[in-house]
Image (cartoon, rainbow, N blue to C red):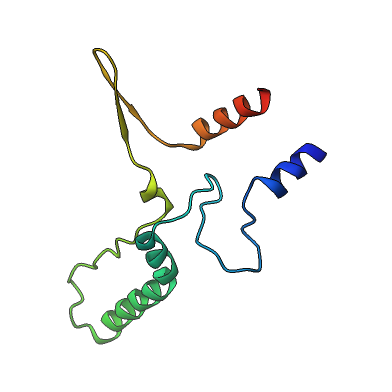
Amino acid sequence: MKSIVELLESNWINPFANEPSDLVCISTGAAAPPDVCSDLLKAQKRGEEADKLQAERLETGSAFYDPIEKLKLKTFADMKKDTVVKGTNKEIVLKADNRAFGHVLLIAQKS
């Protein structure tokens, strides 16, 4: 138990710290790039604006059948990029996911 607490306090980022810092993905510990940060910080406001637009359409009846635009906000999932590793005869696509992160963490603890 002590080793887990020590690991959390010394190596991992505290998401509930009082000092302001970059937005960090809790599962990977990666800092979000500026475009993802801006979209994440504006998500609630943009969602509320979209709700107002929908309510206005229902009340007034104007543009009722017009399609609703998607917000297309970037999230931490957009930080995952496919990486192509070229081997001798074949290419392998690596994807960042929680399982791979967990396996790396287990291997690091054993050695």
